[in-house]
Length: 225
Image 1 (cartoon, one colour):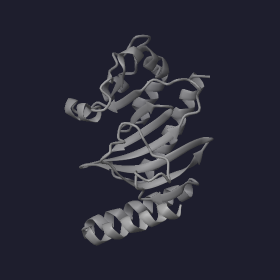
Image 2: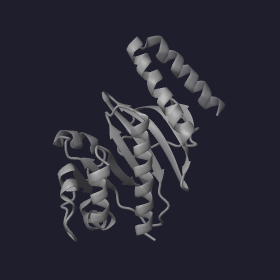
Image 3: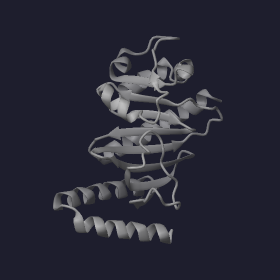
Image 4: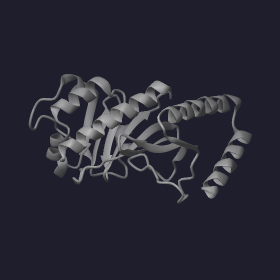
């Protein structure tokens, strides 16, 4: 913990020396929001974390590139689930990420559910390290809600297309289509990730991510009991 605190202080000092006033103001605004949110929800706020340090658990998933910068790192538990928040910047793109450790014993397939407004180039760049992901042709078992079909695209390995639809039933995708936009979803290695990309950070956004993520985690774990 002492090593982590020293790294945090060093980074904040260096950042404050080089940053523009507008960047500093936005950083203070975000820090205040995250600190209030974590306090209200019983989480612990760390702030900046060096992803090369071993003193914390790395938030992984599709956005865990070697060039990322992580800030506003917070950890804790809710409803029996261990979870972490982090704000992750990759070049000019910023992701707010919620990582929830699933409790189900099943070997979940790798699944990504993203909004349809992104281009093919965006997804090609995002999936650069995960070339096995392909768009799932929905409707193998039942029709999905038109709002979900219009708003989202589901990706998985071709060998997992059917498993992905068994997991994300029409009942679940109806709720996702109605209540998750513009959030994205990933399942990988027993973790559920909820993403907000390039969204202004507010108490409402973080609370929505937490509530929706916990609901979905419980639904996924129930389906594998």
